Image (cartoon, rainbow, N blue to C red; front, side, top):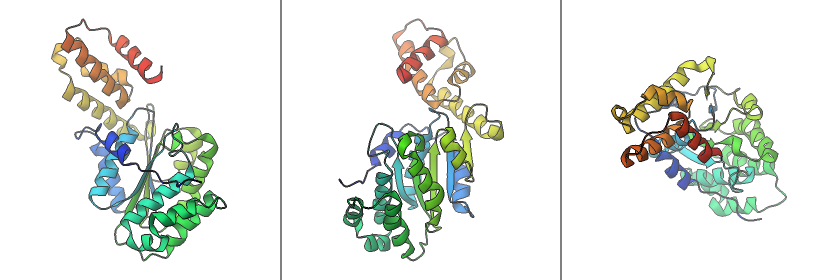
Length: 288
């Protein structure tokens, strides 16, 4: 069995570049307040429709917490990448990254060599690996003076067959780890995931029609308008920022695409198509 440690540095760099610094402050403020004093809470969960920008937020939080010394580990799930949808890779990656920021843990586990040795043992299943990689060695470490954050992005992109293993780890095993280790988890609000993760508090949901957290969604829509206003000269267009933001239906991904399409049309001097044509093209690119 090959060594199962993934590096997510490229994911963090790629997604963080897509962040507009004048947006998302409401979520960062909410997260910061929780992180300073999480109480009994072990995880901050962000549920959102596809395209709202969950991975961007996860990447920015990874950069911010890394800069303050609070990042423990980050793992970005991907449905089409075997190194990103396997719970063994998740455990190995978290263990490897924690070794880099906790010298006592690194010494007890034996660094990456120790991680790989355990991962290569085919007799150890996911539950046993959790015990040997995380639970037992962390329990031997003195309490950390600094809280550490573990980020798990796009949980919904895990393979359906292995998703139960991921969810079981998150719901039943992660709470057994030391209290100085807390989690930030993102996912689409799929039923199999949402019914489990919504038990965590806070659980922020950025979804159209979510009346329970309308204020969060309203601020999310305002962020999209801010993003559009900074990049488009609406004085040269036959439609307003409200027209375009409504068409985005809360999806930041659409806002990115429409900015590029409008810039191409305006710069080339072409006659502007109706908005519906722009969004039909975006749907073709995204899901065609």
